[in-house]
Length: 230
Ligand code: PEP
Image (cartoon, rainbow, N blue to C red; front, side):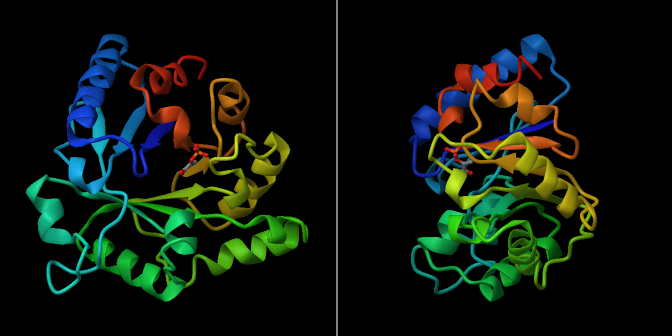
């Protein structure tokens, strides 16, 4: 199982360091057989720990250059970061990233050997059209993405389940992950309102290889507690 924490625009540099210290101590003590990843804001990036991979929530597809407000390969290298989240629905929807730009990011960071957590997910209006519409929508989000890349991890995150407190039903997660598994050989995470109440049922679904967690990951003890029932 992979447990990935997406802080979004929460935590400062100092609180991220404290978080990593506390989580590292908990993981070290228990020696869980899990892969644990934390994605803090860009201002809090720092090298990975022994038990925790630190990754970037976003990065521009260039080494450096005239891209106001962005960070790129040079800035990630400074903090020894080689893991990046690409295609999160908040970047697709709020920041207006289209598939062409997302594929460009993917290709750039793939070329530089990064581990890539690649997010896909359908909005509610697509979900309401039924499973075939969902499958078609999700596969379109793989346009120009190398699904055989050996450092790829896919995160299936239904947009309507993110930050709403309403995770997808286990049956729906199982069906969607099985659909993705037809072509994706790499790990597939589920994301969208994962919490202490639903983690056990979600973790036992076949083809769920881990979870990407937002709000329930912001406290290190609470995030760590998600690993206990698994
Ligand atoms: C996310 O932002 O990737 C996410 C899954 O958030 P939450 O767990 O808060 O729904």
